[in-house]
Each structure stands twice: as C-alpha cells, then as structure tokens.
Image (cartoon, rainbow, N blue to C red; front, side):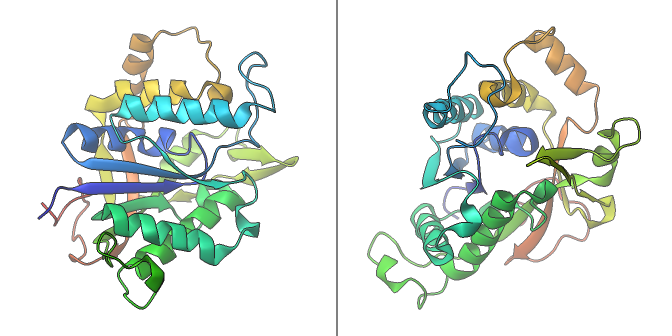
Length: 273
C-alpha cells in the first residue's frame, strides 16, 4: 500500500483543535501524510481579546492561527476552500463538493474525517461541511462524476474509510453547568451539544502521548480561546492527563471498503496497515 494519508475536512479554523488535534498529531508523528481542509477563515467569529485582531483583519489573523496549529501538529499547511464564514449553506453546493472531490483525487487519502450530520451542536456551517465531505467521498471514486477533473495527475480515488467526529454522551453531560444542557450561543439562542451513546461510537483514539501538541494547537487559536491563563503549559497537560475524556478522541465509522469493526477500534487506519 502507498503511504498512509489522512484528510480532515472542517468549516473553520479551530474546528480541528478540540476533538481531533491529538489524532492529527498522532498520525503525523507516525509518518502519515495528514492534510487539513478548512472551508472558511472564520471571519465571523468572536474576538476573545480586542488587541488580538479587528473585524477587518480577523480572516488574516485566524488563517495565521490555523497555520500555527498545523505546524504544532506536524501536518501539512492548511488548505482553504475560500468560502465566507457563516454562509456555507448558501453557496453553490455542487461547486463546493467539486472542490473536495478534486482534493481527494489529488491527495488520495485512505481515511477522511469530518463532522457528522449533527454538526456537533447544530452549527449550519458544520452541517454543510459534513454533507460536502460525505458526498465528495462517494463521488471521488466515480469516473463519470466531475469528468473535467480527470487527467494524468487526478484519477478517480476511493476513500477506504470515512469517519465522523463525535462527542460521547458522558462528555456532553460533564459539560453541563448547574444542570443546564451545554450549548453554544448563536444569534442570541442556545445551540445544544449533541452527545452519542458509547455503544454507537466505533472508534476511540488514545492521544495521551500527544496532549502537548493538542493543547498547544488549541492555544494557537487565541482569537477564539484567549491567550491568558493562570496555568502554564505543563500544568494544563497534567490536568488533561487526569481527565479520561481529554486523553481520547471519538469517531463513528460511516463508510468502509475494508469491513466493519466487531469491537471498538483504536486506530483510524485499522484494516489498512
């Protein structure tokens, strides 16, 4: 088999950090080619500290933050689809899928990961990215789709495994505040996090050895998470090691050409090595 290749497809800078930063770091450290495709530059996001960016330069700052994170993870520089944050459901859907089909055919990943159809907490951009990724995986291997992509350097390619990033129900319950379900406020209303029962989660990746990269990658996204903390890096890593949910990242397998796991997987490339 050719070199192992993983492609992650998300909507915004920082989407990769919390739920997949450890996995991206792990597979890069193991020698896989790891690519991150991001639909927007997050220009509609909040600015956590006013001196970090302005509305005018936020896209450039958030792009720089994502490049910082990718460097920390040890993966390839990010690939941007150049869409506007908050507008993914409104763009030409076929063209968006076509961009992803082309990238899949160019980089030929065995494994693709993205959001699930719930978008973690129902964010419309997340849901759009999930749909694009799912359809692109299905179409990339079909020679009669997007025929103008076909040339000597861009042949149809079948992705062997497609995973959705998911949150375990236990993790969502642990995020609750005073009994209130955890949510992200958008346009003044709560969008609730969606948890999955552990029985439905096919794949759990341990990232104990990559907590430093994961935490440093999160810290790169300072316009979103802030940069000040009472804890230094070593203290953050130590606290994360004490939390079982921080040392694992969870996925559900939704497409597979190499069969389905009978037990919980601990490797996104299971069946491909």
